[in-house]
Figure 1 (cartoon, one colour):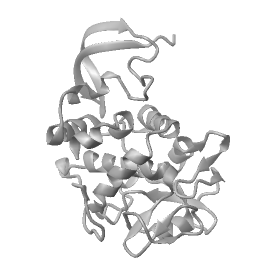
Figure 2 (tube, helix red, strand yellow):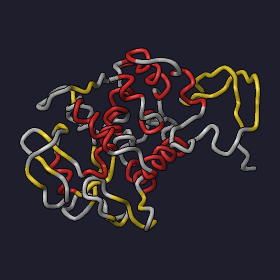
Figure 3 (cartoon, one colour):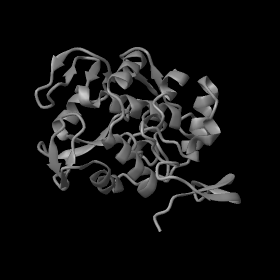
Length: 268
């Protein structure tokens, strides 16, 4: 019990999860092999199919790896976020994305002082609403204050504007939203995930990151700024833990840009 092993063989889908159909070998691995190495990069075989690729080929390979995840209902997202976004310093609370405040897990709903379910890739950018799939994908759904969520609306991501008093360090104007420095990279990596996860196959949406603001349809901006934020705010332990919880307990897929930050430059 507790020993990590590596299973090699032919990968295949099994109830929407990738698994090993024909096992060729089973071996014991060291404590950090198959997980995160000392630099925080996920080193397991999950991304084996993407090794050595770049550009469109890498993007397509990652899509194939993270596609067909287990989908939640929108009502089940409440409980999932209580787990994924739990405050490490207070297990009774969740951390709100934009303000950084710690709120009771059960002070959720639609009232002014509640927290609710923010779609970081705004749901009107693709018109997916709260339907299962993009509308309930918790890799980009985060707890936020109701008022802050409303102020962000469906704005693109860019820098500048007026300070928003309920979320210190946040700025906004008529066409863009700039989150606080501590979560700039988090936001960028969620947007990169959505672009790769939803590629238009099997009747799903084809979401695309644009390098401008004022977007409409299935586009969201701004790519050049998101890349800056990704570099400026590296992956932290909260993101890594969130990725593990989503993978192990809910959706069965991972955010590649948390596990391998270098993929951003290799694709875009």
